[in-house]
Amino acid sequence: MRNLVTRLTAVCVLAAMALPLKAQTATAPASSPASAPSGAFRFQYSDMPLVSVVRDLAHFGGRTLIGDVSVDGSLTFSDTDEYSFEEALDMLNTFLEPRGQYIRHDGKFLRLDKLADSVRSARTLVDM
Picture 1 (cartoon, one colour):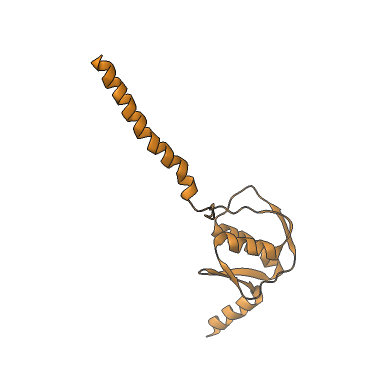
Picture 2 (cartoon, one colour; picture 1 turned 135 degrees about the horizontal axis):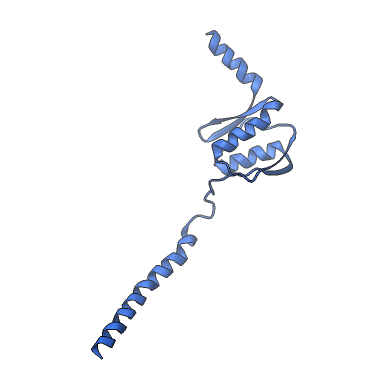
């Protein structure tokens, strides 16, 4: 009889220990912020204006767009790969280059610039 009481006590203690763990596990996702970035950017666009794609990337990366944000054209590109912010920025710059533009990343800011302006600035620095 004493052995049975010991076993029942052990089962009750283990059950009591498991309850808070289950409750904690169940409430953990609710305490994490819903706006936490997933860490992956996907290009899933069909005839999307490029300016919208630029804004999507800025939003994904938690960056602020500054300056004149205008770019002509649209993007149709669907890729199953996932990209980090920096990789997505490089990829988007590949799409913008034929249009004579690129996105410059400066800390928490993004700026859409013309390639010709950056070439002029680079030449000025070299000539100094």
